[in-house]
Image: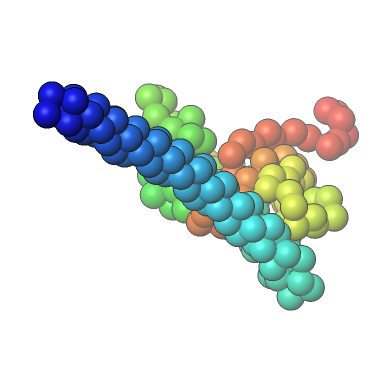
Length: 196
């Protein structure tokens, strides 16, 4: 009788041990599979993001999209130059903040209008005309361009009935954003040497 109880206890302990061991092995396999699933889901998300980015680049390579994007770059540059450089006598540069906001990045808008002493145009009406935009050959993979803009600037001084015309040039740094092309920086320069 005693040997039956001992053998029953041994078999019970072995059976409980086998069940616990089986449960532990199954648990580890489930954790391993969960880890693999998480890794594969991350890989899938990365591949989808890459695929979306490449699809966007492919879309940009169609002739109509290229022509439209080039047109948007030119229109953005022309509209910005007109809004930036034209001023009526007695107006403030800070008044241009809302007008220029759609054309510039937030960072550049802060550079232009944040913590800057306001400037007033006291004497002249300034108008811009004959705007010409130049930039490199369009590449759908590029997300930034240096755009050169040349334009005629007319200063109409009321006090002396004098009109000054000058050819002015600027370099605009345009970047592609979710809202289209925006100006990120501007450098003004003269193509004609002083004294001419």
